[in-house]
Length: 260
Image (cartoon, rainbow, N blue to C red):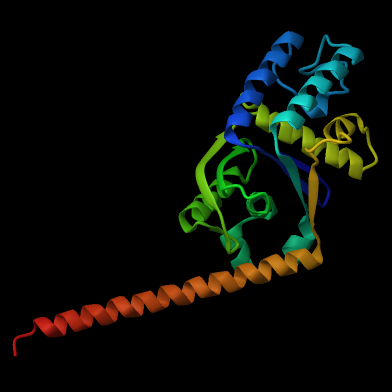
């Protein structure tokens, strides 16, 4: 899920084991049905005039938030938010780099794939991922394409990652996207000194589930982009070497078939 304000872009993900994500989906939808809410839209949580929470008073909204945040903490391993300053991304990347890795939004999704791999490696989990992104973003198609490239290469910025499936969905149908939306919204509220109700629910004390924010500032963008450009150059050089080998092999085969 994405939050944009002026020059700041936040893209959040929820990471969990498949079996746990399925359990969360079932329980999450049951909580929504009990509250007679179609889905949780964080931006409308404090709107009492219209929106998905129409008819619920403050206590009822808070109770639903407690239920859903509890499910998030129980069934997801971690929530990670990529924060990117769009002007820095444009300043520190070349047109060639952006043609490969896309706009800041697409770059953020790739960084979340890298973060997921690092998390899995740290906790000795298999770095195999089913990726679901929310539809509707103007760069969603671009993000899907780069994810397919990552899947084919088995690499995300030279970090080994195995993507099993790639999908696009709506918040209405997917609780995991609602939870990601809640996380992105809460992190933005924290950064902008806004309402911390959802933030506090998603950052419980004494819980294994503790969200993280990865801030791609000047230094980190430099590190990532330089590494990616070296990787791209090495892949290009390797491709050229393979082409030369194929050409040489073809030439040798052709020579050997000539009559003496």
